[in-house]
Image 1 (cartoon, one colour):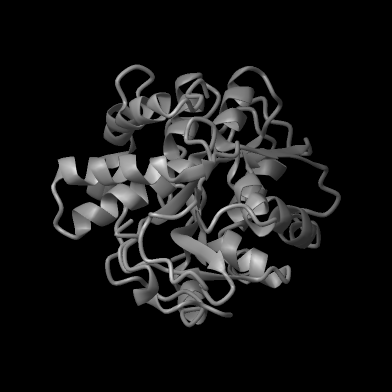
Image 2 (image 1 turned 180 degrees about the vertical axis):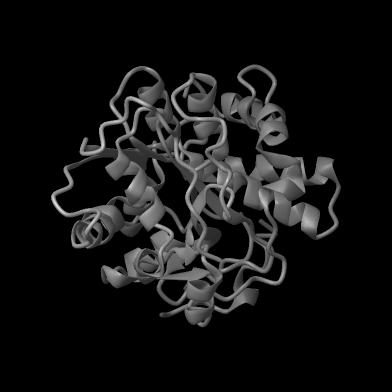
Length: 327
C-alpha cells in the first residue's frame, strides 16, 4: 500500500489469552449478541468477524445486533439503558464508565492483552502524493470532536506526546496543541465521519487511525498516509456486560484467535496476538518513537488534565474556539 516517506511530516512537529468477560449467573447461554462499539470497526464486524464466527461451532445460529457511533456517545447510551452484551470502545474511560455503573465487571481487563483486542496508531492522511508537502500543522486539519469521539482524544494525545518525545516542555507541548486545534477546520462527531469528510475534499490533512487510512485506500480513495516518527499506540478496550449470554462471551474470546486476529489485520488493524502481528510485520512497521498513553500518565490523568469539563486544557482551548464541549 502507498505510504508517504516518514520524514514528510516528521512527528507532526505533531500471545492468545482468554478474553476477560463480564459474568452473570442469569446469563442466557443462547441469548443474542448485542454489539455496541465505536464507529470505525463497523465494516470489519459486519463483513468479516460476525460472518466468520457464525461458521464456527460456537457461533452457529448466533443472533447478532450491532450499533456503531462515537465512542463516548456509545458508552453513555449503554449507561442509559441501550441493550449491549459486547462493548468495544475507542478509549478506556468509556469502558470505566460502565464499570462504575455496574454494567461491566471490574476484571474486564484481566487477560493476556489487558482487555485490548486490536491496536492502531495515529497517522496523517494526505492527498495522493502529498502535493502540498505538508510537514507541520499550518494547514487545514481535520480531527473529530474530542468530546464525542475517542479517536479525537487519541489524535490530540499523539500530537501533544510527539512534542514531549522531541524533548519539548509541557508548556511548549500545550502551546503546540493549541495551535493545532486552531488549524482544525472541521470537528465531526466520529472518526469515521471525519475520514468521510476528508475523502470528500475537506481540509489538507486528517489525523486518523491507521486502519481508517488503509480502508480509504482499499476503497479507491486518492489518499496517502504518513506514519509519524513519534506517534501513539492506540489500544481499544473490549468486554462483555455483566448479563451477557455465553454466546457473547464466546464471541469475545474468539476475537483473540489467530483467525479473528488475521481478519483484524486484513482490515488495517494491528493484531494484539504476537504471532499474527509478526506474520503481518511488513504491513505494520513500528515507528521509532512509538509511545503509549501511559507515557503521558495514563487515561485517568490525561482525562483530568486535558478533558475535564471545567478546567481541561483542551476543554478551554475548544471553548475559546467556539467548539462544543458538551459531549
